[in-house]
Image (cartoon, rainbow, N blue to C red):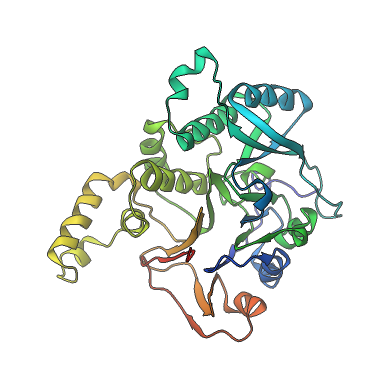
Length: 367
């Protein structure tokens, strides 16, 4: 049995990879599994996971909850909560196949749900919320209040699949060769400073936002204290969870465009702001962001890939202390920690480059 990272430290790098087809053409999940397998040496077997978008076309209008349970008691309590707040269209165990390197799996269930059209009178206040806020609050409440239950995916027409193990083994365990999606992301290794467990593997998700992250955030406490003032619960004590909540807060709740979100979390240095590189209007905006959202500045080495309901964003820290390579082939954009990973997905790309630190790559669907 693999020891948890809190029990023994197994140094390793991290690996991230992802791609998106702008036209919405769906690609089999085996492609993203192969892309991470060639970066095996960056992982240490303490975790891996995937996010796929466009994988549930038959339930594209429902929220897909993926849930880990430690026990049937936790499942019964959670299903009672879901029944009170949602109309359940379908529920089942998530299909898996036995794998010799994936052990001690929890109960893994999937629910396709709509927001309840007949809320209980005691839920009248919550029923006035917009749909996405309502769903996010319910997910946070389950994860915070029901012991032994963890909703690790909660968006529409997308899903997260993660576990303790090497990412290529995790992909086989979840039978990702049976899914097709227009965008995929993947992560290998594990949160740096927290024990290895299934819920703590990347991607981290809330609604359709997912984050895979290579690096270590030194601003965790400042970021956490700020974001918890707005109803988020950072129960996992890991930096990647905080990044997910920061993006949900800035992009969904405040309506901030993603290129501005990047200016908040990977803000230019003050010396760069004062250098005259930016226009007066842009300089004023960046100064405003640095003053108002200083506690949301992410410091430390990182490269991230954000998945959302119609696209991907990739971003490095300002000093580019973690590797990231991008490429294009036709209407598909690839992002990875290493070029070799991209070449497994598309051996002959049209263009390949290394993004500058702090400058996001944002790709959305054409339609």
